[in-house]
Length: 103
Image 1 (tube, one colour):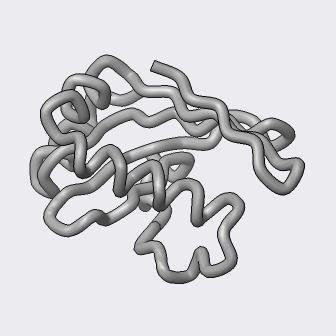
Image 2 (cartoon, rainbow, N blue to C red):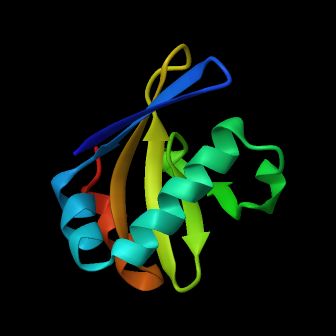
């Protein structure tokens, strides 16, 4: 599933891997929180309110957003028209265990 947004002459696109999409199908509330958080990070007035961190170690190109007891892992592919590739989503412990499977 892809979504493209245009605001303030800035555009970005959200993409989801099958694993992330599968999680979001049964957790629509978390999907909405995630999409709102990404929008705030990219074009919002107060991105500092979002709990986002770079994942340390060899996966340093990945970031995570904390949404209550859930984590969403993503990476940014392109800086001109930003493509946010959502890789994993799920409860805190499960997401970090699945990180080993990412390339």
